[in-house]
Amino acid sequence: MKAMGRLLPTPTLSLVLLITWLLLVRSIAPGQLILGAVLAVVIPLLTRGFWEPLPQVRHPIKLARFVLVVLYDIVKANVQVSLLILSPKREPHPGFVEYPLSVKDPLTITLLANTITMTPGTVSTNVRLDRSSLLIHVLDMHDEQALVREIQERYERPLKEIFEC
Image (cartoon, one colour):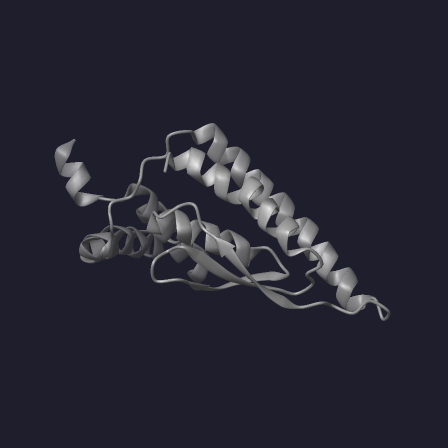
């Protein structure tokens, strides 16, 4: 079992690499499966020196709930942005918000920033070097404090609970 851990230091990454390879080549031919498996083993082995230790997911049920919330928010935001763009009378109110971070773990900050960026209408643009805040560009901002509260409740707090930061 220990040898398997050395061969596959990050099994989830290996699985994602294999699936990604098969989707890129759009084939499950034996040669592509073998090449994908080789890449799925070799890439993590060659890059493991660059990876920081990953925090343990303490609450997988909360992680599943978080993913569902993010997916729902992505669909909802897509509809809102589409209506904003297609409506001739509505003018967007773009702006920047400096979001105060209560987490300091690099992975959690990265997940939060990526979650915000995946939601249409918002883009994470910068993290302060001291990890105290995240600069966010908003396509249509009406209430800065409401946006900060929403991010804290819907994204940051669940991430803190999932990884127990």
